[in-house]
Length: 169
Image (tube, rainbow, N blue to C red; front, side, top):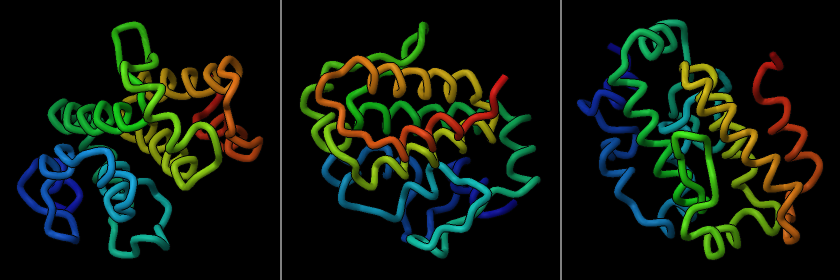
């Protein structure tokens, strides 16, 4: 079993010795200032220059996520945690502003930050690992917020990446 699957099964740490459950329990400040966990929580096929030892998606990993509900549930737990970090919440009907929206949006929504790149990564990962409904809901929520919120500071480049992160259907 590869190290990414072992990490998502909870039997192996990331390259910094942290288990999935440990990362998901970190507070928002830690999630903001630490830059080497996002590639483990939301892997893509692209190599990361920020975290060169982070795994990338291969066919084995993609197939495992598509066939194993436990892996998808752990990925969904990672999504729920990162959504809370952004002040958002996963509901049955989609993704909406959470109770901490007013506070959390200040770290990513009112101006362009590294979080715009993280969000593109998250969208691509969710789509690749068979959380297509959640990926589309996240993309839709982001684009709607950018249209409706008066203090949106997300630039056109980030919006373009988010719009193009998922295949058009």
